[in-house]
Image (tube, rainbow, N blue to C red; front, top):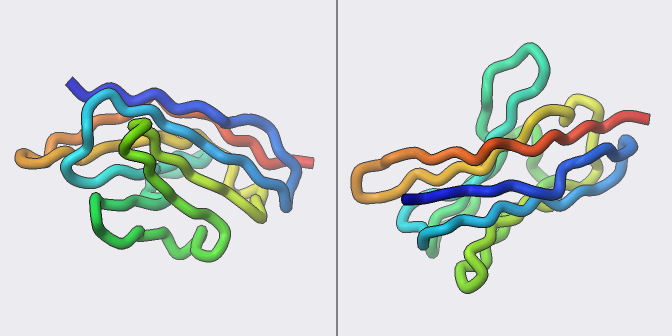
Length: 115
């Protein structure tokens, strides 16, 4: 059973950086990444990657966020730079696991960008 645990959220000033981490309990065969839910909006994709594949980013984070994975440690990271107030929200780690495309979610970590 896949379990995901995020960490690394917090309060940061505009223009600052945070690194989110997500520990996963079972090796990923499929897609792993991050969604977020900003105030008043639905959950949306931020970034994702597949084993051996290229990363995919939402347009609103291209050039600012970087996703990386360490399979040996069973960790996925989201490096967030040049943060903006509109990046404020709850960030969720997710996995879409083959072969049945079952989706797993972490509980989320709060990111607040404010001066």
